[in-house]
Length: 430
Image (cartoon, rainbow, N blue to C red; front, side, top):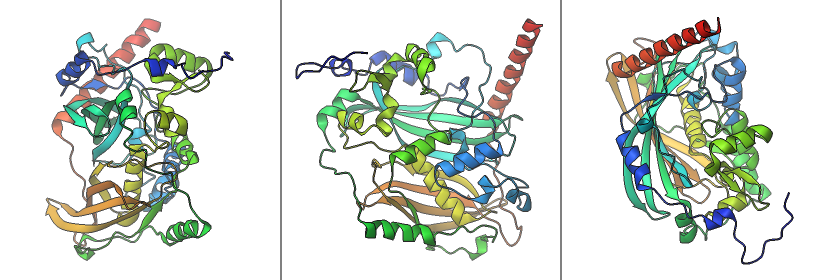
């Protein structure tokens, strides 16, 4: 352990290093658009159990009994407990697969910060108690541009496809990530004027009153015929955001693969695997760059006023807002979100929205929605749109879509290869 005292001329290794985009990384990313590979690293959880579903729902503040009660779902159209919509970010079992060719490996983007800017998710079927969730992924789009915040930026849209142990597509998700150079974001200091939020007891009481008034639609069906264009979706609160919220979100399963923050000997081994992900803290101890979400000093070191949330946390909040409104019998078919502003520690969000359209597609009765999360600064940080399938008085059921056949074929081939490799391993051990 070093006891050396830093002087005004001392610089940490992070300050000495100037990480910039490598042209080879950018070209590699472009070459990989449309190339899919099996996810061979498991996430925090690999199977949806009652405990996993409950813990994940509660990690973002959702107490919907469809997700947290082992018995409630048996009395609904789903016939059992189902997982929250965003379960894909916490549950993935590793697939056995052939090694990825060297020229198809993802670029490392060493020393580059990555921000989630938005996502489009499409849901096809529920994840049930006992389901194993597998995944394959790849780049769907790569675009180089200049950013007001961080200068040169690379916009990478990642395609994630989740399927169950029967090779049935559960959902797909296109995630827009912005890759920025750390030294550029620090120099520009765009956010120096933003002050962390603080609250009086009366202001906390106002937020508490929103929580008190929130209600789920629950078992009472919301029929398509009864919905009117212009109808309000109600009001939901989230916040004020605390470090505890980030810890709870992690404990529910988010934020581990592929970086896998860990401790002790495991952290040492992880450091050997992805050394650039570990940035020395003020005490000279290598620590994960992911700590930007709970280490305010580190966040300030790259030009931000304090730590901030994960974009996927707000996606969870957005789906929570929707599932409360649609009720037990409804289904979120698709949702697109944008993360336009940071959500800093101390920030509070109010979620509002309205119905903007109604339509029928085959046997599905759909309602189009626009909704958003607005911070206490009056900034809309996460606008979103969605299409939800509702029960009709004619059919009494919300229809579900059939997933794209080409994705189903990829899932089937990957699961088949997974089984072949498992069999080879067993024979090798015999």
